[in-house]
Length: 232
Image (cartoon, rainbow, N blue to C red):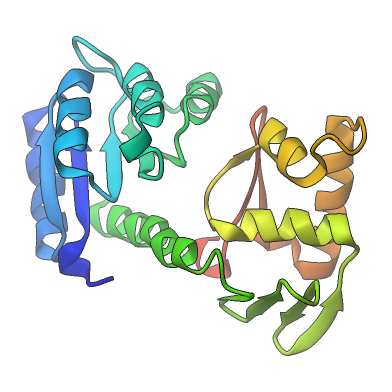
């Protein structure tokens, strides 16, 4: 997708924040829309169907957490990438953000260049989603062959047991996205057997040993995500 076709919705009640971030992102070639509270954000999102929403938490009328929850319930907006951009850096705020349906959580203040790098990383997911139905997926030096249940890293073949492969395939389907533990259990194990959260931890540990520890990040109290080495 051409960068000029990508639409980003900025939501913040501080005009200076909207102006500064909007200016830097427009210079990158993105289409920018703005809103100053959660209610406006939902209306703008419905109207413009952005690819990415950067959402503040503390706002009048409707805060970011509630807005995120409402957006995730709208069919036409369910696949939008949502990242909180907020001064609230507490662990419980981050957990609340991810539980509301956010894909990422970015704390302010942040330098424009670093924010742009974060946004580019999030938008790589658009390319990954277009490859979801393909038989193989390439991420950096990693190639995932869904037909053969085989992973290649830097040309080296890595054979994974079925559940490890399915877990890895899920996490890599959207690099950078945090998958909740209940989503992982439902997607990978479904109704086959009754398993506990510890089962996920064991499989993640094995994947770290085989693929590389730096590719797997734990979001405490929420779940796991796969990241590229660039994002570390």
